[in-house]
Image 1 (cartoon, rainbow, N blue to C red):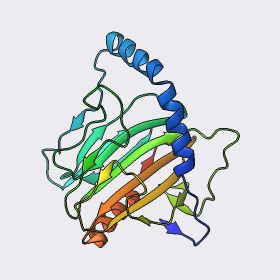
Image 2: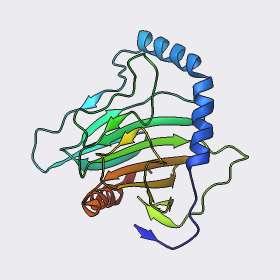
Image 3: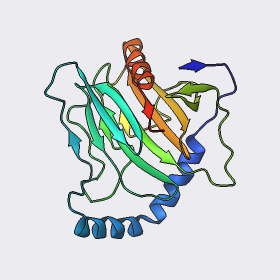
Image 4: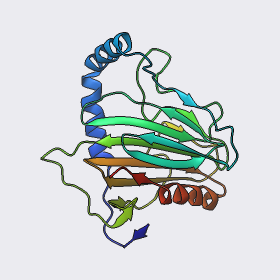
Length: 213
């Protein structure tokens, strides 16, 4: 991955607007999910993939042409459903217990609520459709052979508030957008006190991205 210093592009307003639109159409999404579950065998929602039995210490997640290599000690939570302009994909997390994308009242939540332990990491993925009125980010990096934008890290609880860290430890949020027939978005929450280890894990994750041609 190569990066160059340019003005950061904040994905928060785009994702927030997409989420607002998704919530207004939630009842349509629920109907579509019920129909799909009734007609498609093997449909799964918010499934958790166990670590592979073989050695190597890594597992592979594949969604819509994207393949990601991640530590087998992390838990993968699939959050796939069709939204409106923003489609959640999955979460990779060190949290125990792992979160679920469906709340107790049956509502959807993305990123799902979870509490990380010290030095914990949670990474969520989604697809954001670029509408004509939206300005795409400035591509200042390359990830998996695709143009990408790496936003400046943020600290505190202002971003991804659903994911919390233990009291008193520093919290870092990293956001990435990758051109992939729209925007593949990735947001990582890293808990201290050793932020370097979490950042190294996220860097390795991005270094192992691959896309179908």
